Length: 115
Image (tube, helix red, strand yellow):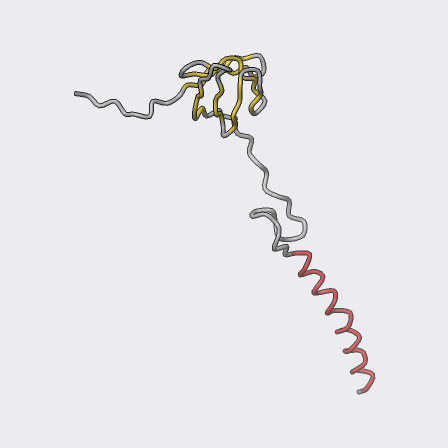
């Protein structure tokens, strides 16, 4: 009877730290969403999306024009998301990416009303 109690105590002494370690490894509260909370799961594959350029604003100054593209303030000759800003005009910006020219225009903020 005493030997059985010793054996059970030894089993519990080994199993308790091991089980808490397994639970700690399986769940990480600081992991980003969708990372995979169980051992052996790989993070979800990120789909490659076509990069788009959004022209939000054009500033015209005597010192040179600048534009806000994808949240970045850029001037001619600078880069935004691996595209070089070639020319900034009154309502459009010309970019060069991988040898191709891209023209992005400001959207007309006022809807035209038919009269």
